Image 1: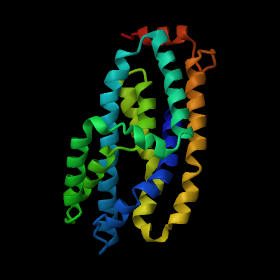
Image 2: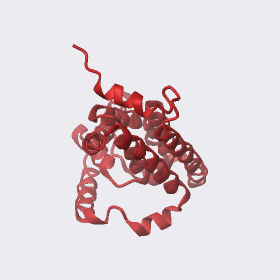
Image 3: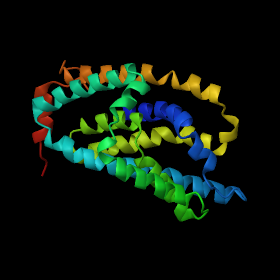
Image 4: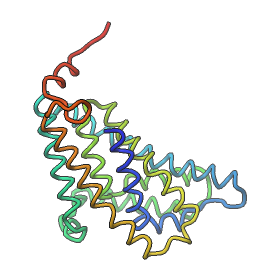
Length: 233
């Protein structure tokens, strides 16, 4: 599943090129020297990944409470179906549902705090932009959190979201460094790949939940019971 998280992160970054492009364009990185530029780029990316890991921790607590041998596999099937639905339903229709409506006031405060950081060029502000950016509502982050919930423990959930964040690094670093060279047409073409991968990932989640006794891919319920109760002293 870690490989799936890495691949999801890589594919998600294609979406980020279109959605987070303005943030990349406005990021107040000091380009006076390569040392400062890459140092601040690291801080921005570290902030984003830290936010993803924090979300993984929170959702991992929820997922752990659901980890009962059979229930976890049923959850994997449900999450797989939800991933496929997210991929097939257009973003405009999903926007009507507005998953973030219950916390709309908090999100608005988050955006306001994020906007204030763009007027500064300190390392702290760059890190804060990355951290706040990671907490902004995003459909692909929701999909990643589905995967984090299906992990067997909190550590697994955090590791899943960390791997997801690492997967976003290559393209998100390039878009910050070369944002002025990525046009809207290119962004649109890249985003067409995203639904295909999410459907494939959702299918893997469903297969995993079916308990077909396929090693590493679809473990049986008995294997989950044994794995959950083995203690070494």
